[in-house]
Image (cartoon, rainbow, N blue to C red; front, side, top):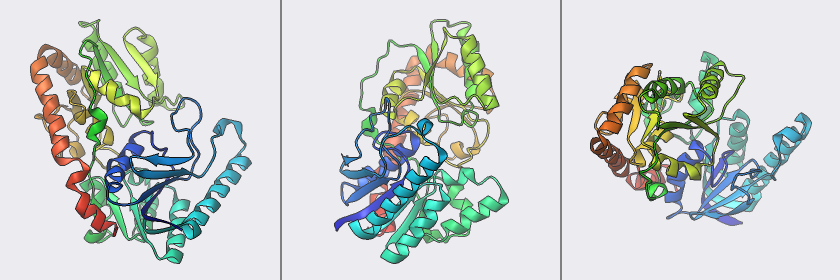
Length: 380
């Protein structure tokens, strides 16, 4: 049996993905410098343009293994998909029961079935079982689903949370079993040169454009663009045209093809350079994040040292203020536009605020600040 200290189980792609992959990497990379870490993805490597082609290997001292093979979800039936998932779960059970020895398992997934599955396996192996619930709480939409999530999570040996909001959400779990691990950033991702000749504002969003307040950003940019036609707004995101909010976003993009560039969903390894070269970065949610947290993308925005425009919603103001970002009231396109104007007219001040954001992330939100306590919490 191959020995590991920690096995991470998730469906998030590796080593390149979006915010969830970056969240895991922010601390797994540090853990792997001292401990043996295996990353098991119960999916298959991506097809198409993604760089995730290998089924197994090592990245940043982290061994990784995919349980499936590359395939297109569009080209298989529901029955075939169910059989593929069953095969992966059987393979996962075999690996965890017979192929590896380990001290702890960490689950990063909101899937109920995989949660129960790992709880069963851990009883047989007598291993420690933990869960990172960064994304899970946002999907508890009803009182019933909330209670179900809380009771299920209480069965773990401990949970990793990204914010005080999520920590307080699990008020049924004792303090010693809740570990607050805030947004952590891999600063090495931003050790790149900045191209100051480019003129664009940038927003990177996942599937929930409404959560990120993208319409407010677009409306603000169009107002700003009236007097600054040489600037563009670049948007890296998914578009779900079944969603009314996404439809409104698409309409504005289509009406302004010369000034708004929709880039689609792009690989995360391309994002740092886009952040670095931008005039400013935009994240303007109009209500508290569903996941009750400080979003990973905001941490990366600040780490890039590029001036960032952000809303003053409760969860974010616990961490940042006007000294490290340009704060605006929620639902205020006119305020956002005014900050954009201020940034281009006060480049030196904007650069200083960007640098202060980077220094804050470097000082408070890197793995080294948490290494000893995290290793102890995970019993590694």
